[in-house]
Image (cartoon, rainbow, N blue to C red; front, side):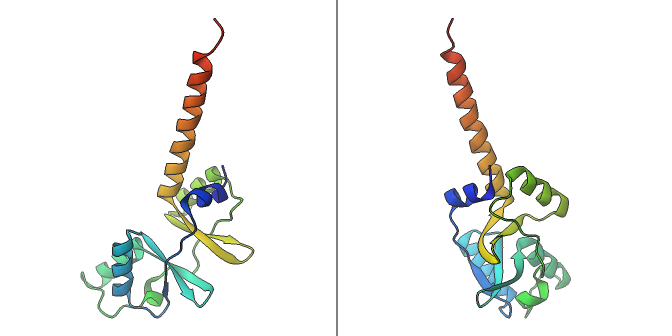
Length: 144
């Protein structure tokens, strides 16, 4: 299974925040939309990723407060990326090796989506369930 297949089912809806945005505003968007990450953009150009991990680190540094922290100060500036043709097993390996839970998906220099560890786990589970049903049907209908 390739990433583009997961994005086809998931959709490519992207929520972003400006690099000079306030971290507090990013938290509000992430909480309201039930997201673990936002893409940091400057116009149509991706500058980085902001995830709940960076928010937690900023809270730790600020003794539990974000204060006037700006997105650009706490974001991941060069996030690990994926391509739509990447195989899911390669993506899982990349996520495990780098610790990244959210990867921007880039095609021909353009951001086309974000894939999360949860998206991958869900897709793999659904694929395994489908294969299981097919195998059980095959075995059930096996000539005696």
